[in-house]
Amino acid sequence: MADERAKFAAQTDIDFVIIGAGASGGIIARELAAAGFRVVVLEQGPYLRERDFEHDEFKYRQQRAITNDYDRQPNTFRMSEKEKAKVQPAIIYGRQVGGGTVHFTGNYWRFHEVDFIERSKLGPIAGTAFDDWPITYAEMEPYYTKTEWELGVSGVPGPFDPPRSEPFPLPPLPIKSSGVLAERGAHKLGWHAAPAPMAIISQPYRGRSACLHCGFCEFFGCEANAKSSTLATVIQEAEKTGRCEIRPNSYVRKIETDKAGRVTGVTYFDENRRETFQAAKAVVLCANGAETPRLLLMSKSSRFPDGLANSSGKVGKYLMFNGHASATALFEQPLNEFKSVAVSRVIHDFYDSDPKRGYYGGGGIDTRFVSYPINFALRGLPPDSPRWGAQYKAMLREHYTRSLNASGHTTSLPVDTNNISLDPHVKDAWGLPVVRVTYKDHADDMKTMKFFQERCKELLEAAGAQKVWVRPVREQSFGFHLLGTCRMGNDPRSSVVDKYHRAHDVPNLFICDGSSFVTSGRGQPTCTIQALAFRASEHIVRIAKNGEIKSAV
Amino acid sequence: MLKSIEKEKFFESVRTMTIYGMFANPSYGGNYDEIGWKLLGFQSEFYFEPPFGVYDRDYQASQSNGGS
Image 1: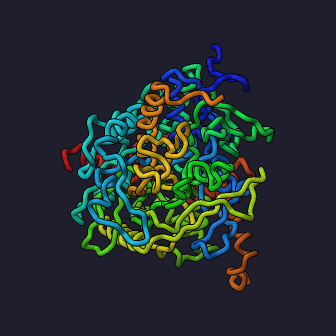
Image 2: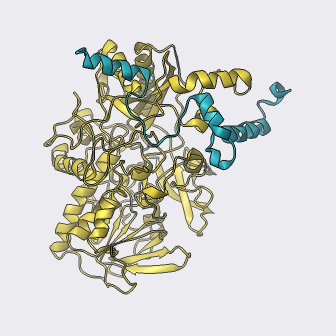
């Protein structure tokens, strides 16, 4: 079969450059190419396919084969602006075509109505930019439905779910022992465990085969192509239009602008580290909540001295990680949680913030397996266990198939002093300033995590665990979810993009990824990032077809 | 003797490397005949069928018997 994939010569007049082929970039690529535009997607990581992925914990966790590599791209971290940041891993993201949707667990929760209007409901919170979104759940609902159907999501509505216009396209994945125990515990406590919505297909769907329950989901690329990553779905469709080129190993260092303040294209390092310029009529930035603000801050010019699209000073601000809290338990019988997808039941009884608790916060709970063998042996046993010797070995044997985590996924507030900035001292392997993370959980976020850890403990005890243990909740210094750093809003003085993801300051620059979030949601952002991407695409197409994006070339 | 050094950095490195050798894929040269995985009860397979564990097996049985 002829390869119909586009490969544009350097001089070709391109309509859009998309930076980042991940959760949002993959979707926008397909939508813009399908609408007739010529699109180049620049992705810093490689272009791997399902045949390249392996069952290999050491490769994907210890050696970070498909996530950012701290040797070449270190981060620095500090808790407050008074400190000098230290080099230490502080963020993780997918670094290949498909981005984080390749290695994510597949938890695929919609936001609820309340997530978009929480400030109106609860009032302001000191020290934060807690606010309503400029869009509502009702406006987002068609795009949630679209993302579930276009990508392939398995589930059934739970008792606390927001209204939906269509059912899930696929029935839920089979229940696991962890799900049965979640139901058992929840029932005893008067809570509700519902089948987990997962971006993993339970039946054949649109030419892809169903999940084989091999268990290699979180941290791994799916060898069966059953995980509904953008790599397995929309990116393949974008290429089939013949108008979309995915250009891997392309590391963007600057978005270029002209004297009129319009974007003209981007400068990037190609796979041989040659600096290359790609012109475009417009740029869509989808590089994730850490790399997106970093790139804007690196794209400063005499016209944009504080970084591109940053007249508000909000680029990089209000970084949110989501809170995480868990408890672990040992059960009498084997659960074999290493088989099949990570999560089969979720509990949303504590989703809403309850003013009676005296602080802000909410979240969800799921039950899931503890870890793959290496990480289990390193730190999967209770903290008071022996760490070597015959007794350690005996405990590994006793615990591995019978251990279970209950995990709470919770809100983060948009704290004024939490942010992504450029480290003034540390450079990456390309000579660019690295991501500096300044982050300290808000006191309410800490209380929420502790509250959820208590609920996780209760759940496991009610489910009949033989032993339940926790590690103390500590302030977080590491983010899996990178949110809020180029927030969306109606007021250009307090936000970076408008409600259509167009930069307030630059008419032909669009930004859509986790950075667009105004508030954090309850710990599972991917579904909302992708619904935003479908919605943004529709508006970018509308704006482009109105003739509002004139060629700057 | 090991007790006296178990809090030291050197011991931590040796422990970590030993665990890699014991539990990483046999293709790296350790975990001979999947001996580490057998100890845990872990299996690296491409396909599993439900029921996966004892509790979901019993759950399915109770559902097919008309239970809740």
